[in-house]
Image (cartoon, rainbow, N blue to C red; front, side, top):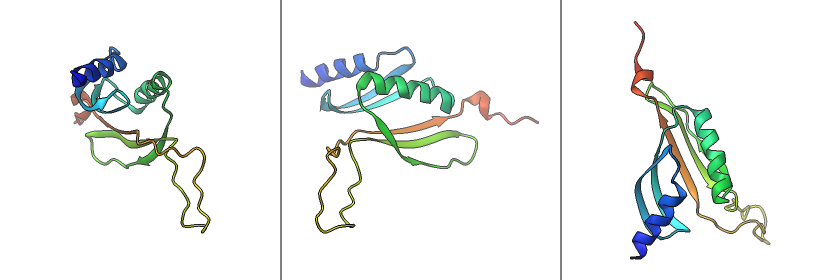
Length: 124
């Protein structure tokens, strides 16, 4: 019952026309894994969706890693983390005190944008 309620809440969260929920795992709306398929074809479309998603969920993400892409299948690949999961500088001082902003939020997002079949054709 709880899993069905969670799925309904998460599907409502991602109920936009350009989002399709493929998989949901987790036991609460605040702690879940969702695999989405978006209709974004390039980085600019993703950035627009990303800003809308941040304003809708109230979670602000920071770039954790941007991977270089080679070849013709991957257009953009990046990882994001919540801004409230700061990297503490414990190795710099003995009197380690974490930032007040650090809450240990584990919210992350991995993005891979693949080119469409039309975009992969090589002109001859």
